[in-house]
Length: 420
Image 1 (cartoon, helix red, strand yellow):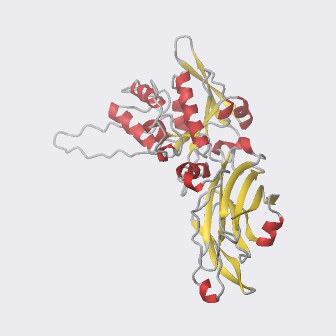
Image 2 (cartoon, rainbow, N blue to C red):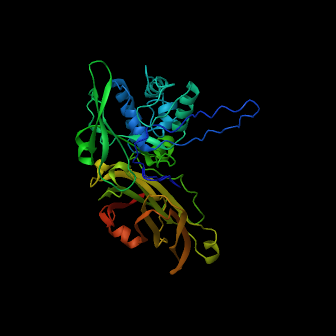
Image 3 (tube, rainbow, N blue to C red):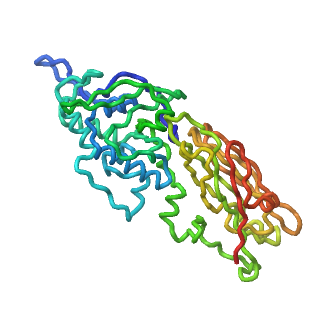
């Protein structure tokens, strides 16, 4: 969850509560035409949103709503996140739910979005205790909420699976976006008269492991389909073992599916050995990219021209609680690995955004005992961490099929599976 595509990355430790949503101009002279003013839609900082949430009178139902959303995102293969877009439009929904036609939106008596609206309306015409912002009308409040809903801001709840359903409001903090491992946060206490009081505390990952913590940060992964989403959206591409596959390739002349076994290169599991980003930013998003030639059976150089490389590219989100633990994926990299394929291009990156570029490499195939290279171009971004990239030979993959191998700071298990 670090920085999105061309991510907005701004240091955000400030004490202002609200973005300025309205202002009062001097009264023009009688014969002077009032100049037209234009309100600037400024996206509030992460610190401002954390301060706003710390003022809300959360009840258990609101905490449950946030938990429903982050749990749904997690089930869809994303981080434990509740985007502002979903908070204001489909309360309780997770990242990816909008693509699932069978998903029924949850209903809440008083969703968090209404809690925010009521709180801001209560300040209409008065100055905020923090930031001295004036909300002059309901229109100002609606405009402010629209800005939030269209932003990339979200609530991240690390270790949310540990929540036992208590009434205590989570500690609220925000991503300082400066590689820090600690930050200020707000511990919320309910007073006997129903008001809430926020005490400032220091928040670190150790606290988040044992105490519910909400981190206001930025979303980076909802623009991609996770493997879990692909499995839900395309059940016809999943066999009984849960392997994600491409459509069955068309057999070329000279290839008999009834007499030859089909070899499939599968990524069985994936182990992240260390976190790549500060914990405030959330999980690590890895992209696994493999370039090869599917169902290669050419017998002449002329037939070689009929083939072009295929690229498998998918996202793996590894949560902070999953460091060092094998995550089963069962994802097909090459669905038809024939004996003429000598190697494939393989790359693992950890997504950090930047400008789009690519790694140009070569996949090798054999025709009549001669090797030929087919150019492959694997895309990535300039700020991405390249965990590993190189060529994987067929001999290596077959020799170590089913064995965990080391690739930089991740361990991967490949398997060559055979079927008729």
